[in-house]
Amino acid sequence: MAKYQQYESVLLKDGRIATIVEVYEPGAYDADIGDSPEDWATVYGITDDEIERKATEQEMDRKYRESMRQLREQGILE
Image 1: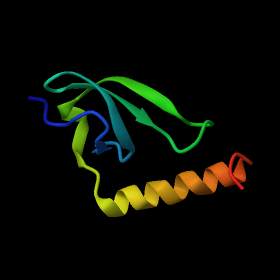
Image 2 (image 1 turned 180 degrees about the horizontal axis):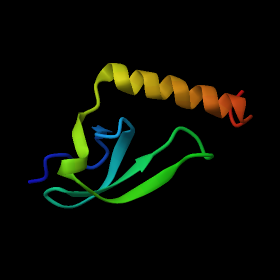
Image 3 (image 1 turned 90 degrees about the horizontal axis):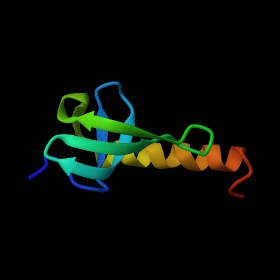
Image 4 (image 1 turned 90 degrees about the vertical axis):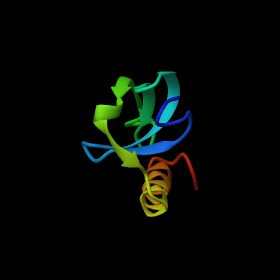
C-alpha cells in the first residue's frame, strides 16, 4: 500500500504543499501544486524521497488563505 493516498496534501522537501492526484504504485505519485491559475501545475513522478510528510492543519490553512488572496487579487473571487 502507498504511504500517501489520493487527495492527501503533503509537504514536499522543497517547502511546497502538494495534493496527491494520482497514485501509481507505492512510492510513485502525481501531485498538483500552486495557489491560483497563474501558478497551478501538476508535478509528475513524485516519489516518497521528495515528500517530507503529510501537511499539517496549520500549513493547509495558510495555503488556503494564500490561495484565496491570490484568487481575489486576480479578480476570480470577489
